[in-house]
Amino acid sequence: MIQAPLVYAPPRLDRSLPPIRINLFSDTQTRPSPAMKDAMMRAEVGDEQNGDDPTIEALCDRMAALMGKEAAVFLPTGTMCNQIAILTHCRPGDEILAHESAHIIANEGGGPGALAGAVVWGLRGARGMFDSQAIGAALRERRRNSPPQTLLAVEQTSNAGGGSVWPLSLLNDVLGTAHAEGMKTHMDGARLMNAVVASGVPAAQMVDGCDSVWLDFTKGLGAPLGAVLCGSAAFIDEAWRWKQRLGGSLRQGGVCAAACLYALDHNVDRLAEDHANAKALAEGLAAIPRLAVETPETNLVFFDTRGTGQTATELAASVRREGLSVSVVGAYRVRACTHLDVTAADMAPAVEIIAAALRS
Image 1: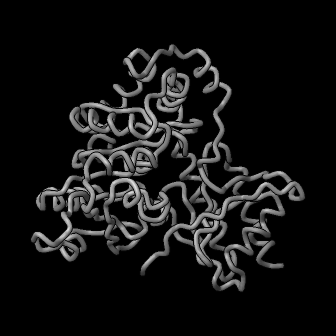
Image 2: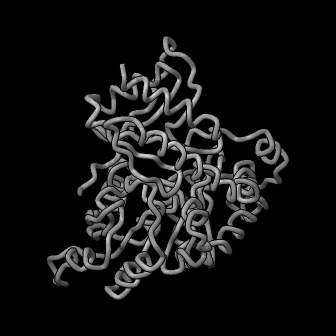
């Protein structure tokens, strides 16, 4: 089944609506905790351009070690990590292979084409994943009038795939196939630690076959901004040049890097709570007549309203009037996302609000 790309419908600022009581719109909605803010205020800072910010340096060293890579660079967002990785790996006219629902295709403003001049070929596969056979079917004959296929990109977890976790055997197989065909490999690790916690596979083992990988700190890890891109020393050196071209160094960015370090210390293991809450939410939603609910693997719960007579947009608008925020990702597909700013006690009320909206 081909899955439509994510088309987020953000909650609008409407003062006629009640405040949001249960925010399941996205884990990007998380706010830094008082303890995280305190760590930010106490951070040692310096000029990142000169390597003088000890907090950024500590974060990059720690992330490189966590991912089993030689080096890392601190960036404001995950989208910047993806685009800088593409710019570093590819040249104008190159072709990238990725799942057809990949974030780099659907949610980055056409960045690969606009910035790198690269084309992305979308591969099909269930739950945001594909196999070596799909790669083989997409391989072009190497000739002078074919675009060079230089990069394979995977997403862990797969957002549009329902927050699904690539099994290690499948992941290693597709990464190995790409390398055998002369391609570099890149992982969009926006929710990588969700996959690590859910699977029990250490991050370094999970990304061993990736030439580049990044982790986002603004989702389940709760930081206000920041992502870290990792790879070989040569790759990161070139990535830094693209960082300069796209905006430059962050100067006293250690204030923000401190939030990421705090997240690594305090907010990784607790991702299991988000997964448990997502499971409870899905079980409650599954009891609602004519609502088709996908079984979650991590913190994303997708459900289809087609059988209820309501569109996803209609349902989202209805529950928003009751203080519940969810995201619309298709004509009938809704996403609810659990995170550290919602609790187990919020799941039953969320289910009842959705059930009541469908009954009405």
